[in-house]
Image (cartoon, rainbow, N blue to C red; front, top):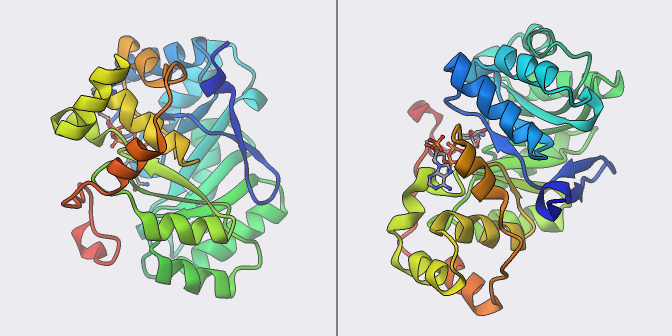
Length: 274
Ligand SMILES: NC(=O)c1ccc[n+]([C@@H]2O[C@H](COP(=O)([O-])OP(=O)(O)OC[C@H]3O[C@@H](n4cnc5c(N)ncnc54)[C@H](OP(=O)(O)O)[C@@H]3O)[C@@H](O)[C@H]2O)c1
């Protein structure tokens, strides 16, 4: 039994969320993605991260059906895209329809964008109707979270952000820890580019693991939820195989202080980049 895949994070509403999951951004090739999700479920992954904008809800629904794993053993996260914030109910209902489920485990607002308040209120309603087990946001910076906390009737459980060895997000992680909001990291392995960071390569050689495993273990040890994406069976297995080594405090600190900071995705303070 893989301890990493079985480990759960307790969210601030007491819902248990597997700390390790499968990312699915760019998984749109039907045959390849179906096989990848099925393989992940077969080896014990129980958390899948998707979004309306990834256009793969139907593939994931089929993979879950074909896997034979009961729906209630799988934690599904999806996200409402910013252009749907004006009509969030239709967007939420479409997620359920496409995923062929009558509830989702976690629903996030994908970015801080106009009408986010209206969309968050809809998530609160769906939460009270038990159509979603936990609600939260993605790509919210500290000041944006502060605005949300002022109006929220239901506290966000999760903030999913770009976080990796060249963007350790110390301030926002600290803020979320203090406010009992869990952090999910996207692009933890920088799409494989962590293998170009000398310090990470050195640590990986010491423990005889890969640079991707070092980046994942670093985030894991910081208590962060990780969702590496892969369509390759070998890498799907490699990514969750991070229980046989532990980074020292000094190594975690060293990675926390790598410079310069590099942001791979859009700047959450400038959504015009989206
Ligand atoms: N909330 C947001 O705004 C947001 C934004 C971006 C992503 N996300 C979520 O976060 C997930 C992860 O981010 P991501 O998919 O962009 O990037 P990622 O997980 O950092 O990297 C995925 C890429 O790295 C490759 N890869 C996977 N495992 C590897 C390994 N062990 N060694 C070397 N290369 C490896 C994959 O190729 P193969 O598939 O060929 O293995 C793929 O090209 C997404 O899938 C999505 O669910 C959220």
